[in-house]
Length: 202
Image 1 (cartoon, helix red, strand yellow):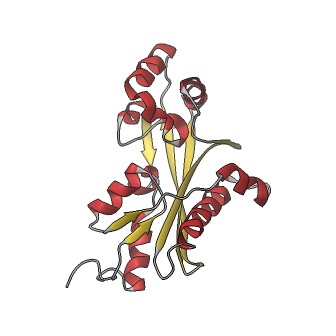
Image 2 (spheres, helix red, strand yellow; image 1 turned 90 degrees about the horizontal axis):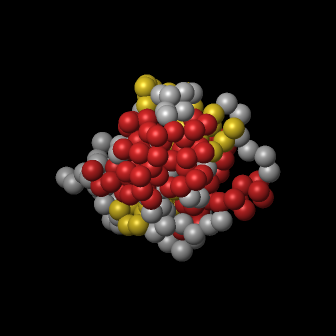
Image 3 (cartoon, helix red, strand yellow; image 1 turned 45 degrees about the vertical axis):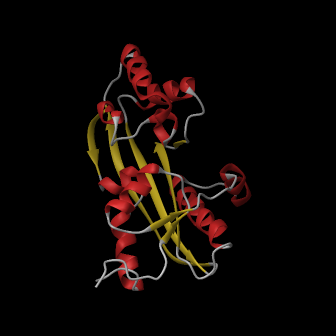
């Protein structure tokens, strides 16, 4: 009996390389269909949101936007936000923004909030959010420049200006939480849903 039991691949409404890699490594056949939504407009229309609610909303809306064009398919949306106390961070727009974010995060403990949603035929059939706690070490100005030089444009691809699975690991003293959540997808909970749904062998 094959591991993946559904007739069609799982649709991933994301261009995230880390999410693609996680699913492929787990043996899940996927079809990439990045969602094309204005995230800030979606949040603005929803009113004030805490970081957890924002991640959950965006995960749902990404999946919904792709699922409209793919009836009867399972579509996965995901999102990740970062909070330092009451302050929320988004992906930096450029190197200067990445430098400023890292300078603020250095020496402090922040939270990553990862959300996943599955939509089928316009209905949200599964959603979950999870948190991880990360403590960044004190970082000198010279090290920040060295890190950003080495990371290049990849520093702009994730909230907080780092990818823990890559050079971002050099920024931290301590990491607490699920590894997959930190990478941007609560994979274990998603796999559990897919088994209960009958798409994965149990």
